Image 1 (tube, rainbow, N blue to C red):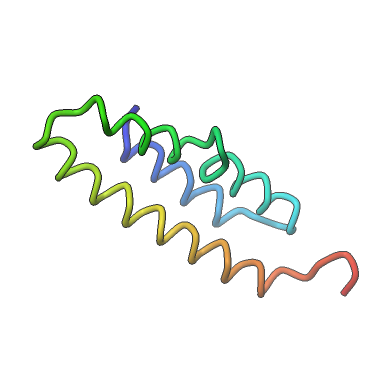
Image 2: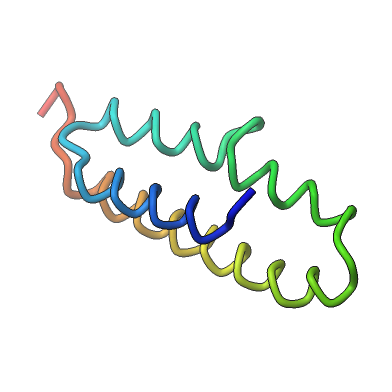
Length: 82
């Protein structure tokens, strides 16, 4: 899995979100139990120590950023009840 490719794709998708349902799908796609970022983090055990240090930090930082972005968008996107 190419971390940079996943990151770029997730950022593009986040920018194009129009409603809360799309946001939930993106969250699940990347952060869910079988999400792309989750799978990358699980695969860390198979990486060399050097790769773990370098890429593990990048993946964790991106995961935090994506979670932040999703939370911010949840506040801004009106729900159906609004």
